[in-house]
Amino acid sequence: MNHRMWARIVVVLMLAWSVASHAAPGRAKSELCPAPFISDGQWSVGPYGPILTLHTTLCGRLADGYDLASVYVEVVKRFSGNPLWYNPQGLRDQVRCHFALFRQDVTFEIEPSLPYVGEARTITSRCKPKVADPDPPAKS
Image (cartoon, rainbow, N blue to C red; front, side, top):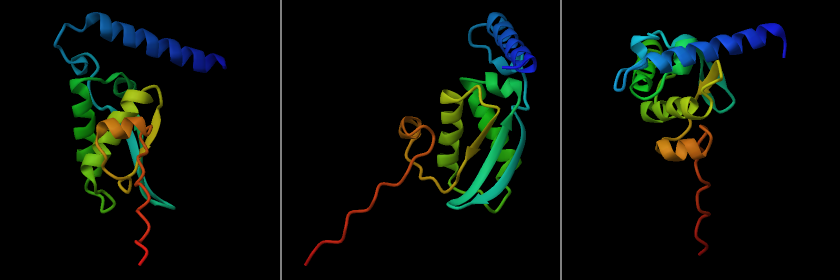
């Protein structure tokens, strides 16, 4: 790792410690590290359908608990007006999954074409749930 990467890691850890040590029980971290949680996002179309690539802010990467609802509300407000937006429950679970498993990532993708399977199954599939293969037709 280069010097700049180490400096960024130190800043993130210092801010995380500061927010955690000053947050009162029951108090949202967003009071100390407010929105925006998403710095940027771009729609594209991949081989399997639309993809929304999101870039988080430092406060976004620190969001948890009640703040995750605020993150998703921000995503909806900023990106749901696009005709590529559909499957809001599946997208919500993908956002929550990325924050549960890959919080340190600055960039992540959510895909409306992935099925809504519930938050637990989205997490066990590492944020990319797939549709099971259909049963073959019955032989006559």
